[in-house]
Length: 116
Image 1 (cartoon, rainbow, N blue to C red):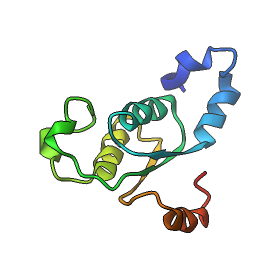
Image 2 (image 1 turned 180 degrees about the horizontal axis):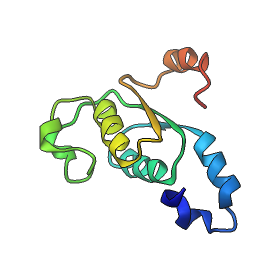
Image 3 (image 1 turned 135 degrees about the vertical axis):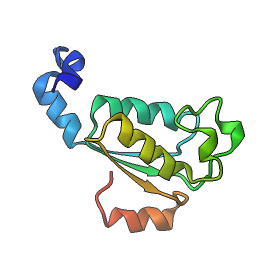
């Protein structure tokens, strides 16, 4: 638990709060300019499971504002590369990449699995 010691000293977090974070499941839609920092902070905080939905591929124009990606990642799906990169930041967090759009039909399919 030394990884989370700084946030566990907060009265509103503590060991119980950290355990709740570790048991939490978050849905992130989009691994772009807003999704990337959200993902980095959630993974850093130790949120247990993240489902990441993004149909896009990495382009060079993304690199200056989406620091999870590298030149060698160009053309690859954002969700897959983000999941791999985030595993290196905190291997205890599970990031499930879904390379598709969030639509009512796909949301209904996913609702069969408890992701939110």
